[in-house]
Length: 149
Image (cartoon, rainbow, N blue to C red):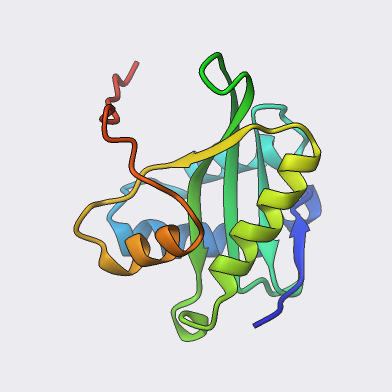
């Protein structure tokens, strides 16, 4: 499947927020619309710590990916992270997520990004297949840990 992949801008916020809400409902993230707005809007305004890419027509996107950015001494430069990726259920299993990951990966590599990381539930077999197909590998020496502030 080939779909348009574009960097989301402030004018895309109203088309994007329902997709974010659908993703959160699907994976069990409890977040109200005000919090979602506050988390997404700065990325559309050019915050250097992240970006949102939309899949499909910008008026009615069929999916999105949130990328975040940090510095990695291990990788020798900027490391991107896939914070969220979502494709509408009716459109899944057509290769769109793989296409988006690979296309955005090429764009980020050209911009000097050295690696892309992500977190995935080990019991999510479909997501594991997608990421392995997209050449992601487990980092066996590490486990993701979080401290909420």
